[in-house]
Each structure stands twice: as C-alpha cells, then as structure tokens.
Image (cartoon, rainbow, N blue to C red; front, side):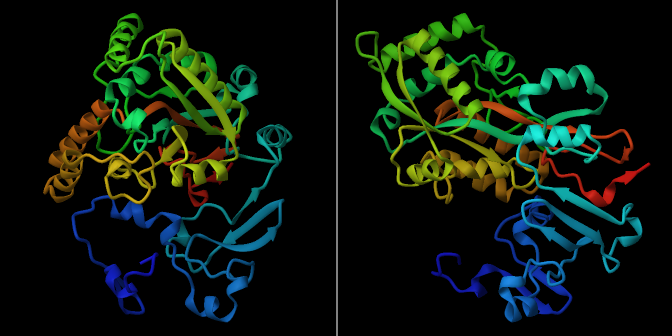
Length: 391
C-alpha cells in the first residue's frame, strides 16, 4: 500500500457507515486492540484535511477523539490540552487540562521539576541519578520498559554471515551485568534474551549460557573463536557503528574492551549522527551497528516479527525458514498458551543463531510529585493524563 503497488481496497479495512470500521485479518491477532491504540492508527478528520491540510494539527483546527483537545501550541515551549466534553469517557476524566513542557535537556527538566514547574518528568538525568536516589527517592519511579538495546550484525557481510561461531563468541564474552552495574548505573536490566522482561503473556527466554560464570563463558568463547579461524595473530577486525551520544560511546568502549581482552578482537568504533547511521544500515554499509527496538504494542510478536525474513525493517538481514515457520504457526494457534509456547520456542531458536547481541533492557525513569494521584507504571511507558488527578 505504502509503495503504491496495491490499492487501498486491498488493505482489508472498510467503513460501511459513518460509525463503523471493519478490520479483516489474515490470521489471529490477540494484540490488535493494543495495536489500534498506537498513534499511527489515530483517525484523521477528512474534511479538515481536505480544506486546510497545513493546519490539520493546529489549535482550533485539529479534530481529535481523545480525552483532551489541543488549545495552545507554543513552538519550542509547551503544548496545552483542555478537557474534551464530547469524549465518550469524559465523566471519568479526572482533570480539566494538561500542559506538556518542551525542555532543552534532562537537566533543565530536573531544574523545572525542583522549582515546582512540573508535576511529572519524562526522564531523569543519568549524571544526577545518585543524588536523586538520595534526595528524591520517594518521588522516583523506575519500572521495566519494553525496549531492547542491541548490537546488530550485518548478515550480508561474509565475516558475520559465514561465522556463527564468531557471532556467538562475541556475545558470550560480554559481561552484561557488569555493563549495567558500572557503565549504565540507572536501573537498566542486563539482556540475556531479545524480548524484554514484563512483556504480556510471555516467559522471558535467554541464551543457554546466560547462567554460566563469566570465566567459563570466556573459555568457551575463546574455543569458538579459534574454531571460527581467528587467533591473536589473526584477530577478527570489523567496525562498530553507532549514533553519537555520551552513553552510546561509553557502552561501545566497554564492550570493545571486553572483546579485546577476552578474544583479541580489533573493533573500530565509529560514532555518527542517527540519520547517517540509519542510512548506512539501509544501504548495508556497516559491519555491526547499534540500535534499539521498542515494542509498538505489549505482545512478544512485535519482537518476533522484527527478525522475520520478509519483515520490512529486519535490519540484520536474518533469514531462517524454521524461524519463519514457527511465527506462522504461532499466528495460526488457537489458544494463547500454545501461541506463547511457540513464540518462546522461536526466540530460543533465534538466540542460538545469534543474529544480534542484546545488551540491556531500558527502564522507565520518572519523578512524580506526591500530590499526583493515580500514577501507574507499564512497559510501554504510556500513562494517560486523563487517569491522573491532583490532590
């Protein structure tokens, strides 16, 4: 549809009348309600789009169906929303409006919070995390987030495509817990698998060596490294490309040091702007790269499909017919238990192939004023303002 090779009528969505939308599915999709709450599926008011497309999202022009309407937008400063009396759940809405502040950085956000200008922060500054724990512990909220930080292999490159033992060795020698404890230091969880902890109706999977002591893992990885044809005299050489940023740089240096110390790998670290990184990945001009994948909806399939052979953004280029078959089998499964077990099997199969290296799972990090009532945590990091109230 997006490429223009199929007409909109082939989408499987129709509106037989003004109040009904019918979505036709090719397979079961128990995650559909969550998917439909994603911003990409928000309805667009056709008359406004046709009459004034450039003003579609401006205050006084934007037509929306949520708990609030857009009443003010100050570029680079703030967005103000006001209660929508026509919202179907208006009687349950606990506040009359909300203002979202646009701030320069995390430190500016913390200053605004401490000055009483904010009730909730979006994040907390990594550099001030220890101070926050000491002085604002009761207001600090940390919880699992459905977001995996990883290094991806370009499986179009012979070095990695033809060397599963090298891929495994590189993963095995990374001490993820040490990375979380000494480099990240703000609650992130070491990722021993691909699908994040806390994903709905799913049991987290892990590498079969996840519980091995690091000394044993390193010894096994060194054997794999030699079997792959590498040694101190003939080290593996490749480039790790990542987007610029202090923390990305620290993680890359730490991981490259682990590779060098345990295996003798020579990894060239290259930091670029995110647009350049994504372009290089798309044109396959990378050896290994840093990315993260955040779930669009709370279901393991949003992670499983990322590595499906024909998925549009399978950035590593992973292709495994057995993996694809398991995903198809899961989609056709009649019961949620069977579906979950199949998806878990698929993840274990993929982890054994090592098409990528998960490093850690992100966490939600917010400061919330004591007078805010109704705050709740969830892996998608979405807390609806309509559910909150002020004492």
